[in-house]
Image (cartoon, rainbow, N blue to C red):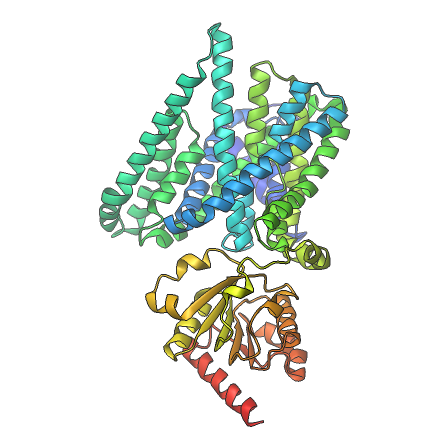
Length: 559
């Protein structure tokens, strides 16, 4: 029954309920996303039916989505987009095709007709950008290789689903008006509108925004207000042009990604993003229509299992063919193993134009709830799952390294695993000492960072998985003076150090830790000589670490 309160009062009650449930979920160590969706179900039509009395919730949810996508775009730069493009396009289109075909087959096996099965197959291929980005950001995985691959794939998915929805909307409009649908004219409209938007964004990035930000950033409050206005304004513009607010908000952030104020803007708006997103999850839960599900539960369970299990398997296959480690494919697949809010919009659209009925809408709604809940638990523990499944993933690993051993020199003074901030500083120190360096990365973006002419002359880059026991055998480790892993993961370093020793490495092997608590985990490896020393990048500068390695080298030579 409806509560006799105005919009403000009902919104206050919903927030109080959300805060209470979130507190209980936090104490029980459960994902807050699930708590907010549960709150949405409780206040939605299936229970208390409060949401229709609080129209502001949907507005807050849309603003939260826009701010989230704005901050995602803010974290990207042109070099990253250039490097992620090929793998994102290949994995995005490949994943959509494979998931759609298999989903179509499962739906047919459960008795759906061809049209309904096709619609369901397409609907389950799209992953939730909002949920994936939120979870990866919360667990500091968005900047890792699998996080960036997942983000690039999501961008491809969003473009595909937007095009599909535009085409369906146009078909539905033509059918309603009794007129023939001109696909060519609609494609031309999309091309011209999108092209004009991109040109406008490009002009603003080059000549307007840097000048404007220099003046806006003189006041923190002004910068916050201006950033929100810019994000919402561009999102509203794309909505008017027939695209989505998500596309506009993302482009608004991307336009500022190359400016020196992007970190300041990101830090200022992160709290606002987290607050507004709770409204999105509440609205999402409120829109779940359980009345239309009925006999679709078995099919919903089958499709949900396929999404949760089949997505990582599909990503492993696609990325392994491209030469990426099976672990990266597994982690990226696990991140996107849920269906999107776009899936719900798409299925509702197909119902409105008469392709499917309410039962199919209820089916996809239930799959959304199951997979979103499942991925909310899977993503926080994805690294643990990957470690547990390491024996299986290693069997799926591509055996031939992406950079053939024949392309490497026979002698390197130093071999460095990982090219983060500490690794790049260490490499500069090594090159400054006249060392020839081999950089081993499983991150393809590392190649675009080697822009310095001196580094390009003295540093070779090879692509490989540090966790693969076989990979060190392909490297020239016998005559190296130093081997340093800047990867902060303890398990990875222990596997790597043992494999390097088996491959014949006799030089000092240094590993990296980010916290003092991790140091004791290397105790046995230090005792048996597998690891020579532990570096603390937050306490030691790169030149200090190099001096320590030199002393180790001299000591081992004297012994």
